[in-house]
View 1 (cartoon, rainbow, N blue to C red):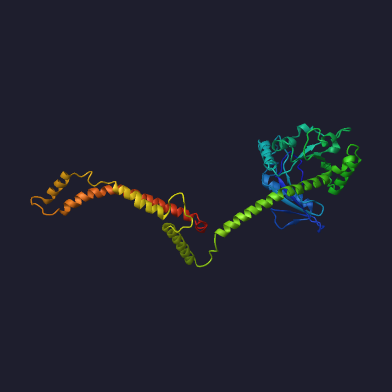
View 2: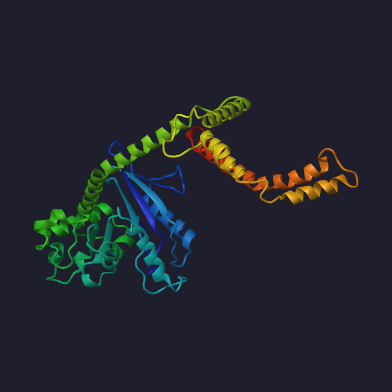
Length: 396
């Protein structure tokens, strides 16, 4: 990956490495340039720089938008890495004044994921207790369960000093341990020293160093790659049963839901709508007639409740109205006299009868409206029950 000369932070890059043992070719592919293969890795670096500048500008800006790169090679392990910007303290160029906060939030967003393995990179020739990477990792992984310490610049330590105590976990212990590496220096990068040469130099350094020669097989970049790949495989083994169980449960759930949706609705739309309406009408009539298979033993429902409203509640309400409690005999006599005028009447006049009866019929309005309301509520409740059935729920 390209290395900035300044303290600037590039956009984060995601590197997916795919093992292709049957193909000796090596190439890279970018998601933002689908279908194009880069066989020259110098051009890959140039494309990363170009895409970074297009996202962040030319003056050390940052962007949370990832650059997705996939490497195909027989010399790499299957692994996905996220390269995050360094923890800048002081803004440079046109970086915003809160650059430290922005980078911190960007890093925390990635390392807070519970399945992410954190590579806390620290220079071996500095005090480990002051490592910004380890400090940030501790915030999301206080027990050190998913953090690997990567110690760089081991070859630049003062003579007579080493990182053996750190590797043994006697300074700041990590469950996944520490791995010392020797990277190319800036001059090596400028001189375009080959990665293969750098790896050979790294191997020779650890094999010949008196403090590391007995542990050289646990040092270096190749060991770090194998360790990360092993962690990935172990994580897959641990989580696969749970993933399979969740997939199986989801499959059963959606299969059952699919079955309840019924047959395909392809065909004549008019016939489909007519069949649905007919089916709904039959279901509704079944509930009203009491032929529903889901009969309740707890409460009255459907047609039985409507019958109860008519024959019990409404009947009692009508019976409670006494037509003579508000009409006196003298009132009736007065109305009859008034309706006959100056001529005595042999029969009760129609006008007098209607006047008396209308006053009493008006008193039946309240129990009648209550009856209508109760019946309406029950009809709506039946409607809601039917619409919740899978057969009708598929139609909004």
